Amino acid sequence: MTRSEERLNVGSERQEAGRVRLRKYVAAENVTQTVPLQRAEVRLERGPITEENRGAAMSGPDLKEDEHEVILHEERPVVEKETVPVERVRLGTETVADEATVNEEVRKGKIDTEGTDDTRR
Image (cartoon, rainbow, N blue to C red; front, top):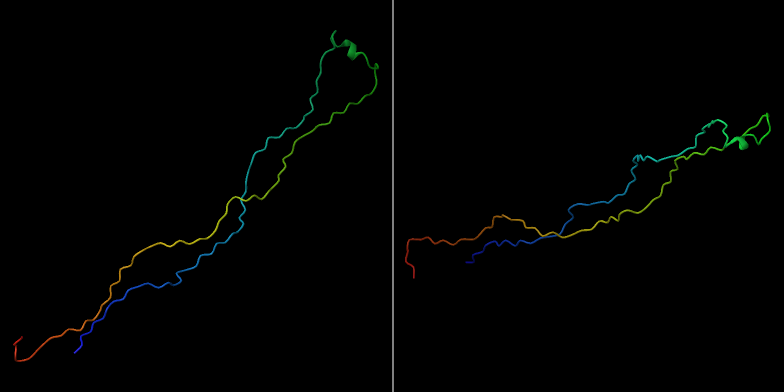
């Protein structure tokens, strides 16, 4: 008679658990910045004729039409965009050790005796 039993052989196998995809997309956002600007404004200056400036005031013709022109300047905002690299991103994997508890029923063959004579030697 041969008594047999099941033995539990527990190991592991490698299988696909999922997929990860790294996708780059472009998103737009509004950026608001305040830029200081300067501009020239015309200012009319009037002053009395004094003894100190009388020579300059009287150096021209007595009465005639005349015109003076001043060029006014102003600053305006200028926007320029540039693309600069800011970060490298890659997908990588790492192996993480873990444990799993296996609970499985195994069958064992048992031997029993029966009979009328119960003498054992």
